[in-house]
Image 1 (cartoon, rainbow, N blue to C red):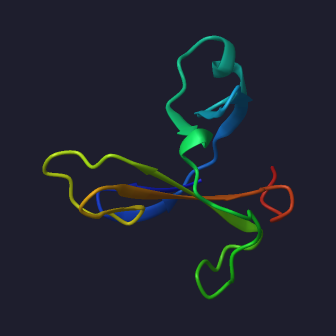
Image 2 (image 1 turned 90 degrees about the vertical axis):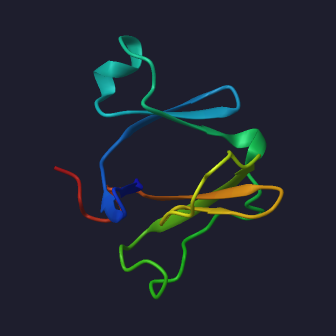
Length: 106
């Protein structure tokens, strides 16, 4: 998963599980039963019409796809590498890749 870390983009391996309409993330698989998720994508707020591989000129990492969600903007919120705030909404871009298909599996 691509994340904004203090203004720099970084890829982090995450364990994910679909729970109802939410895609939940943990650092390790065993945390799913022991900890609250470190991140959640509310798929009800997803505005991506068709999920597919994004072009390599947008993201050089192979087998990457993107989900875009929207929510109400928060006071004082600034744009980041993964979010953009407009007058009435904030969009968040979640870039993910399949490590098996990308040859990244250990």
